[in-house]
Image (cartoon, rainbow, N blue to C red; front, top):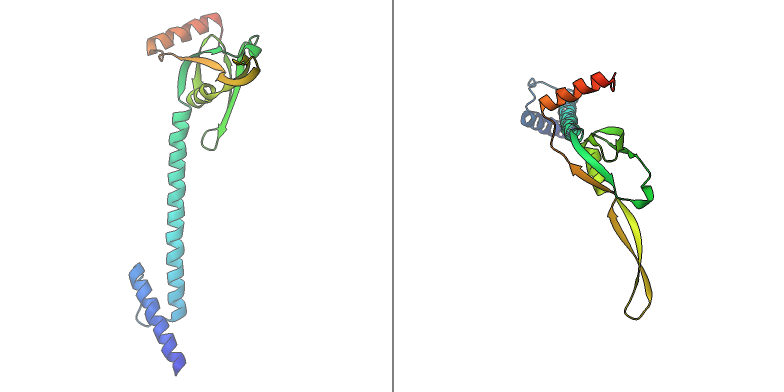
Length: 176
């Protein structure tokens, strides 16, 4: 007899849970059937939440991707005396949203680079070691970190200037 009371109270609690969740059921439903319906409803809600979270992450990645790959017109000058002979620099950047971007950026030329590369180049520094004499005559070396590139951010080309540039490149055979 005690077994019937426990089954009845379990059925009552399951019916209460089902009602709260919004599951419809018949009045003569069994415990096992109601448990299955509740589990199905919970898994459906979990799937909807996970797909919603995935779509939110994808939307956020799309926003980051579009902002990071926006082209910026710049003129880059090399400030590192050790790399004075270089004509440019190969920059590679990567993250989860954008993937891997690789581009050769020439020095002292107007050039378009993605915003993410601009940010990386702006933050890049190199070390210079200086030796100084103190007032007591002792030599002291210290490290100074300086910006590796002087980057001048230029205004974007107008559509007319862009079409003139495209025509010029076509005439010179500079593009395919």
